[in-house]
Image 1 (cartoon, one colour):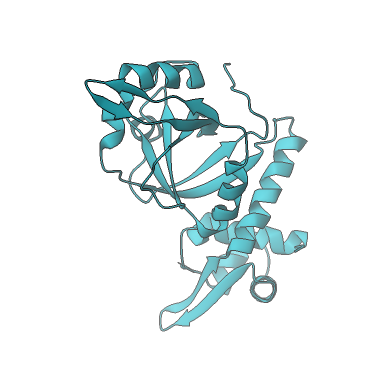
Image 2 (image 1 turned 120 degrees about the vertical axis):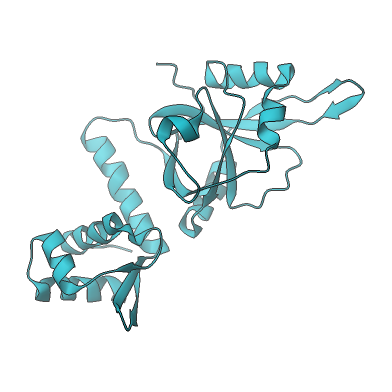
Length: 229
């Protein structure tokens, strides 16, 4: 589905107001100010986005609320990839967005086990921080997650220690906030498909100043390669 430049600028303005996280209050005047256009033009752009299914809109007693749809997020992802190419940055390949959620606390335990620790260090190119960051993906990112599952993941081999068997897993290099990290999927996972678990050489929550419900973007390269810069 195509979108013209004016509508795309309007979509970006709504996203910057918080429209990718959920319904955000938008008036013709506030949108016009963000676009540097007249309220009439802003209203027309908003109507066009709604007709194209790039946003959803609801009217409440306090005013109108607008949410960027799955199609809208995909349009913004495409624009992002094109700007990466334009300014000479390597294409992020795949981009998945979502918000930070709390895990059940098992990541720190498993990360501290030497056989896992050594293998994760090989994936990251540095010692992993003993903990993970959990992200609940947006609905628009679920099809991207399925495509990412088809990439070449790095196998993490299980082992036996103290009469207990620790299972296999797989890891995929990625980036978040400019930091090298990796998605880790246990061989037998209880997580739903909209949850991904990240490891990194730094405590991502503290380093990036993240709290639960904060929105993040995870970049996965198209090729199976780890950046050790």
